[in-house]
Length: 298
Image (cartoon, rainbow, N blue to C red; front, side, top):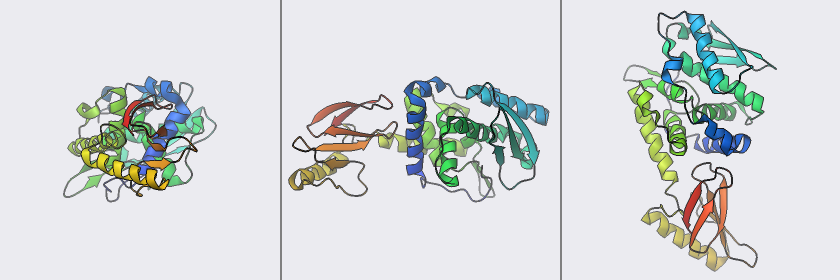
């Protein structure tokens, strides 16, 4: 887990984040993801300055193990001086050794955030789910931690003012907010009341706006006037030239279907699995991966 340095903003990892959400649905299934409909509660990972450092860290680790349903996993938490915020040794188990940066001895409020990321490494290790390359795999870990109910801790660890800044994880604050918003829209849980950092709340609202933007892309009927007009133009071009290559920044693509009607493919706004439907006006489609029902005007 990264620690320190200037805070990057925006959505530079958005494609990888979306691929991570798709991978979670493919590996875990709709039913399993919905068993994580309740996030880690703030009281369960609270850590005050009067708590014993090591006993408190073990208590928080046990709570995260329980949340991620790893009943036979035992986390052994220690502290040492290190470059990164935290590290976990991924062995065969059932014991896993987590090292936390010495700075958490005095910044105890963020111990839960650091442990959430490392326990998720164990969870994904047991699932045998990973992305190639350290960067993409860490983004997968941040995304999974957030989507499965513990990532609000990571976003709440983001604090920034004119003199200093702090952030944990590989995602930007807005990307954490985006994944939290995706989770909220699916599971109906609003994490906004848990934030102690005003900057975290702002990042969440920005992420929610981006997540809702996904739901207003053509050919979905919720698309705005400009999007529908552009879609109609691209559809007409595809029908006249039998070419399925819209502009590079368009979320949809047209493909011929032999002697049948033209088809359009586009990402599901929930899980980002691509959906392919015939171009024939109003269509109701159901994503086979996340079961979202989509109203489309193709």
